[in-house]
Image 1 (cartoon, rainbow, N blue to C red):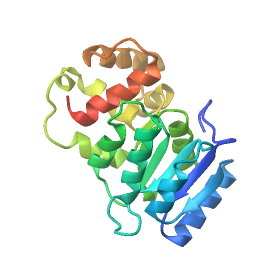
Image 2: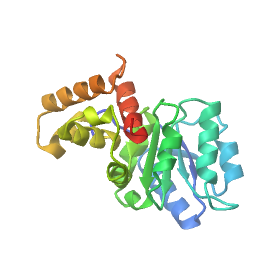
Image 3: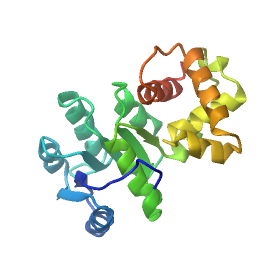
Image 4: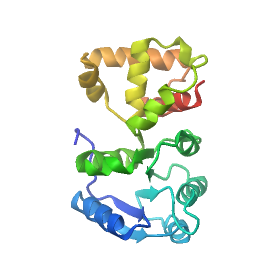
Length: 224
């Protein structure tokens, strides 16, 4: 994992209705140093578990019994309304940009949206858990791709250059400046300049960079 990103000593709630996947995720998390304090298989159980005051992050399947629609997401959004900033990493079989928008609506960060296929990359999954627990935002590359390929972006996103949009898309995936630099074959200093330009063009107020990264991703999702 990148420097400063670790799952050590984290406590998690896990919600997944499929028994084998729930057991597999539990083993992956615990092997990565995350203590799974509760693993539940339904929405009522998740709602109760999210009320605990001793958890650092929740890993939640979007679709849970009894109706297998959006119970997991709804429980997570409700819990964040009661406990602003509660770190939640949502897992889903499908790309649904609306889910990411719902979770990011507060602008507080500490949220993520990954496709379940990404769990096969154990290191990337654990890095996502750690970033979300640390207050960051992590979006699946396919979610970002779906957003990028949508309707034309209105201002102020239209102010961004092509390179700045690439940087913002990678930022939305939760990548660090070093990772963005490696992906785009540019220097970290160049990434920093692009990032500052993004903040300026999106009219984001001076604040810790982590907060402004979240707000920039929100702007990207909102298309405004």
